[in-house]
Length: 632
Image (cartoon, rainbow, N blue to C red; front, side, top):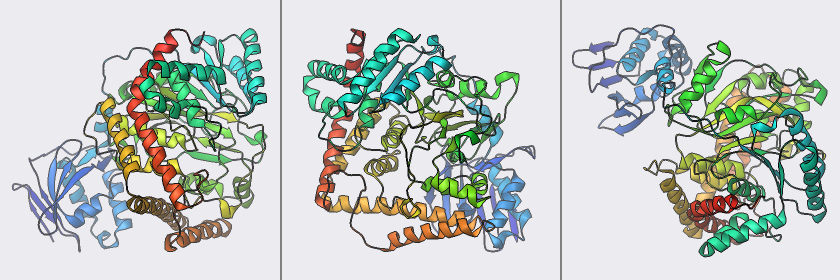
């Protein structure tokens, strides 16, 4: 039974057990939209009323309506942009009790659309692509190559830059030496000295003595911030673990006011097309695609992209507003290319002025991690290709040789974790990296999104060869999954959980709030902190466990060899979820018990919080020192 009271702005639909109630703030009698247009339920604030009613208000437009709670529950499954008919099919597949009432479901969707809560894909595209003030062309970027004990790889990379790039496309190249051995440092310096005479671009060696020189100069300018400076860029050889973040902090200080491209030292600076390139432009939260190979010779095409220079695409888009980028990408090569927006979740904070602060690209070869958990969380089409043969699946588990990237241009308000070339728009205030441990890029990405909530990362549709010279092995299956996450992963999750607490849009104000967040974490009593950490770990495990179960459910026709591995891995997570274990963070160095672990974490958060407060001054002082000629 359906009752419609259009003049009173209230519509009640009662298909089976679901009832829907709308109380519109103003009538929105729109003409019937083209059948081909797509719609999605907007992100809304929810305010419970008496009974089972909820007042919902669009976060984007302020349009509001009163809905029955069960109606809202169904509509929240409509956040992906689909045609009305596609939404009806999806609702019918998820809610068996609504399958016999497609006309009533259609009426509810149309009413929701007319209320302004089901938004048009085309209208969103028009708004995000709307012209803004013309952006000034950015100056050529700086290349920074952090390197650690890989002289042969460094030499190979420098020659690769010479072969594939033209010198006028970047200002200069800085080799930031983070090597642990004197032998490697001497070899790296000799390689750079030779390159200065043989290569056509300017190469600067920034080794231990140069790093100490910058550190001393900063302390001389800001003596009251000496401990913060030393924490971010100090070279304490007694510290255990990797120091990727430290070398990247040098890159940020050496490039203030410019775009900077961070190149992994074990790549070739050469752009290769994805296996099946397309002309799409997508805004979504979807993961990267992948293909798996037995040998390097199995890579498709075996030829570079149309433009083999992998640096140019980064420089074309870093710092650009979204509208400018969309206009460039959707009308490039005199062809109008398709723009697809996945869902309202993907555009939660975005507007036409949102800037691209981070650029990334894919890779062929080594994936950069010995943990193969990621292969089970790939998009559905990629998963099907993965298990189409047992041999290919075995290769994926045991051979570190794959393509990981995008077939088309991909924009996201989330952050890409791994990229062998990363572009940073260092003209704006970016946070420093945490100087120690792995996953520094994940924490940096979450902090960047906290400081600039409407910012974007652009994942480019090309890949570079990632070819470590040292032999690397995959972990066996039973060690594929890290049940206990690392320190910076958990820290990044704490930041992500608080990203909506700061009302200010000013980056400097939000950086201060972020610093206070770290100081508050450091001041949390051990008992409360332990509970918070256990909850974070439990949430990470739960998400992964549920994801594996969903993937298994979505793959009824998958072969048994793949299903058995998924079942084995879900049982590992299930055991971890149901067993009360000791608090464990897998990468805390030197922590023999829980007290030492908590002490390391709180001390690190306290130091980093102070460093974040000091960072704008340190950053400005670094720019002053560089202008005075430190790199000459």
